Image 1: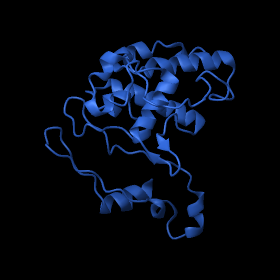
Image 2: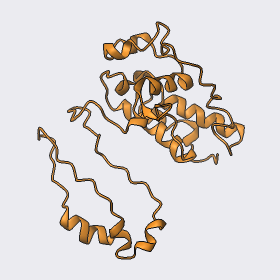
Image 3: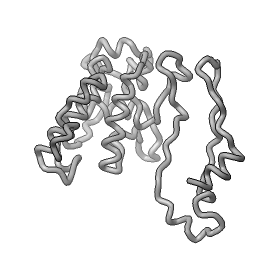
Image 4: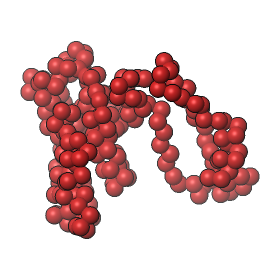
Length: 216
């Protein structure tokens, strides 16, 4: 970290940004391995970390972009191009917590045979785990996205994915049933498809899974 501060950030200073500016200035993306290991290329293989960034972040009251969040973590309202607010962060939190625990993503939207991304597949994966999209919520989205859905809120022509339920030992291995149940209850609370149904932070803090007195 010292070398990043004393070398990288000297050459690549952080742009100053204020909320009143019409545009924002991103920091140029570049690998930082050299600053960790210096001139010893033999140690590059020791680096096993993931770096996150704020490249698609935005203020809730002043949108820098409408397409926020990393693709695999995008909330339903972002995917259907409906209005979004801070409730999108709740969905993001649930997806990240699952990914940190399992080291795999809950959704990826990849389509065979080449594994390219399609929003229709991403939406189908969400429906497969969390159920149909509510009609009233879908009406807030883009018309072209609405056309992907049947009247019941499921994706047209989507084939059954055959995945076990979220509560299963296959999806959440290594946990006893009681722990799985309360953890899944937490995920289902913050990953409601309709953002209006997601809890606010004060409500979320009262969930049993976050009870500091209980060791799950």
